[in-house]
Length: 131
Length: 290
Image (cartoon, rainbow over all chains, first blue to last red; front, side):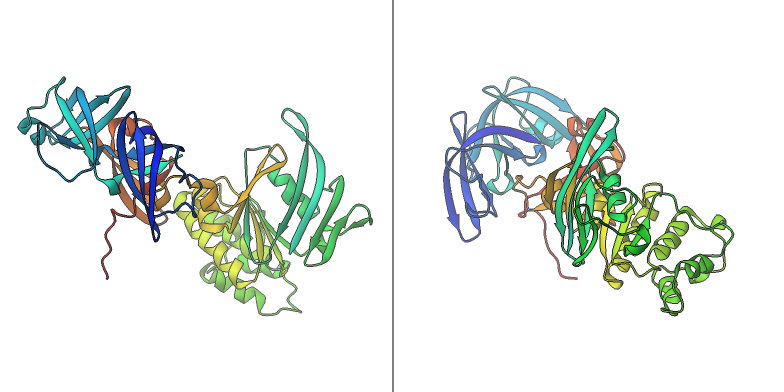
């Protein structure tokens, strides 16, 4: 599980759903949760929070392509562990390290190697929040 | 309503400590006492049962005073409306299952109770057997039935299932739920098993060093409620299969076997039998009408 510490910067509630924006070292991350500031006390602007998402939900992008995903982290690949079908890619952003598991075919196709600069992306509905 | 407000100095592994309880238990609930060994859980059960006397305080069950130090009231264990089951079954070895139950029943007042107990815990096939010819789980079923033979209001269970294997434990948990409902009991259970606590308890009282440190529902106590994922279950790791750079973790959640993919680092921190929280966002699962 990837776990990045951040600070809540904005909260937009509609019905039972809340779109939460979190600042993680100068990048903005978005999560959608079935909670509201009335149901949990951690939904407060300025509150420290951990952003969690699974390795298998981290999409890797290289170069420039238009894409809908809002959660984008500019990273550098520091290690690739290649398996028969799947590969684990270790990425670094500032002092944070995160991990992505994608198919080994995708690693070959994008010609990913340690040192390559890539964008790590996560869908808003895959991001969990934890105190 | 069961009202327990007592203090008792107890001898612990690291010297004396005071067991201080001030709790009200609504009728009809299953309450689990949870905590480290030596926290005072079994002592509390024994105090409720009248096997140990508190130093001060009172115990009232449905407005009847069982113990009151200042008024000098102290009902003998036999006068308190309780049934108890411990880890060991303590059945009479020279009597059949049925006779063990008859012995404990007031059959003149309640002639049908033995048959009803045999039916609820499904002992019909075994009623003429002696305890030493039964498995551990079967013996514990007899002990459970026998604990109810006096028509207690309060059922006290002190780790009754901890000597049984996982499969048998699950069955016995179902029997405990069945008798709890059918006999309108209030049940106090001592257990360490998070899955069991989840399945059985309305509330959990967490004791440490004789003090209540938390009193909450099992979900609030054991799940990371501050994790926003709405799909959260507690399960037991049954199998860890490493495939490529990921591992497939088979987790038993209640009676369902589910599989979860994790990375190597997560897998390295897991062992067979571990209790785990399985969580996902509510957005991921799909629903299909069957």
